Amino acid sequence: MLKAFLNSFRIPDLRNKILFTLFIITLYRFGSHIPVPVVDTRVLQNQASSGGFLDFINLFSGGGLNRFSVFSLGIMPYITSSIIMQLLTVVIPKLQQWQDQGEAGVKRINQATRYVTVVLALLQSTGLVFLFHSGQNNIPDLFPAGTFKPANVLLIVLTMTAGTALIMWLGELITQRGVGNGMSILIFTSVISRLPFEGSAILRAGGWGKFIVVLLIGFGIIVAVVYMDQGQRKVPVQYAKRVVGRKQTMGGSTYLPLKVNQAGVIPIIFATSVLYFPVLIASVYHGQWFSTFVNKYVQNQRSILYMFILASLIVFFSYFYTAIQFDPVRTADNLRQQGGFIPGIRPGRPTADYLNDILVRITLPGSLFLAAIALIPTIVLAMWNFQQFPFGGTSILIAVGVALETMKQIESQLMMRHYEGFLR
Image (cartoon, rainbow, N blue to C red; front, top):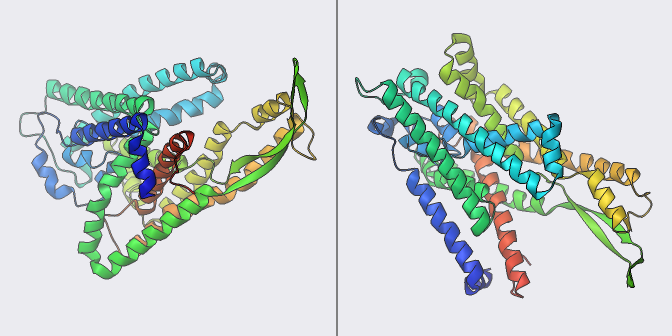
């Protein structure tokens, strides 16, 4: 692996991509330490270790909210916007037409996603500003006396919204000129940046014994995630001999790989984003019954209802995202056009039904695995009453999943240039 790492820096093009990605990550982390104007962030120093609401949002902001920085919202508005657009694509025929148009249609959907992200950033930043002035949910007032004015509120909201737009641009730069998916890399950076702080909190609260147990759980999760990520169902495909023009193509046999965890870490991210909505609403709507429900069931990871809702959302989004990413009908049509067929299955609709049945069956264990990975650390840490590791399983799952996908991209670049890669 060390040799493959050195080889990646011997290739000028790949080296430039890696260095560019590291440069964007540095800018992103720098922005998470720049506080917005007007507010007094010193009162947050003690709040940063109290858990609860701040830790819920800090998963995707890399601790930016603890400093009320220009990147306080992190990547959350973009994730929420992506969920909304993918849901609307299933409902609105026009968006479905754009998706079927290929690259041009995808560009239109991406542009609409950016607009929705800006709108959500405006709403979320406004809610956070009023939350940090109201003193609700044990969150202190960041505004010195006489500074909570409409002009100052507008300045802070625009600053945080501009920060979210800048994060979107940085993520797209990584996708275009760097290595890996830009948004996933930024999420990975945010999650990794929180692990040392959360680990030290466990060490202080539970001592070395519990700290070592948590490390072993984390190691077990990493091994399980890598093992499950490589799991796939190989569907045999046979190609017949064809005559195209004056050329005759040789037939052959291959297989169609269907991953057990087709959706990757996306269901975890989507489920966490959905659970963020009630918390955001509670910051604006201060009804006693609603605030009590959110504090008792949505923010409390030890709640049985919270665990059930999280697991259900993960299973739902696993099927939902898999259905969006893999279209059995389109795959069956492509196989028929290329002269391919699955042995024993008629081409066309029967092939699509066969692929869909396989996908439904293998997605169930994959989704249950994701739910277990997300919940097992939560259950163990809740038994020990830890407050500073609320996203143990989720954090590791996201970090390992993104790291594997990025490594595969670097691997393909190395193999194209006849270098030995990471994965053997």
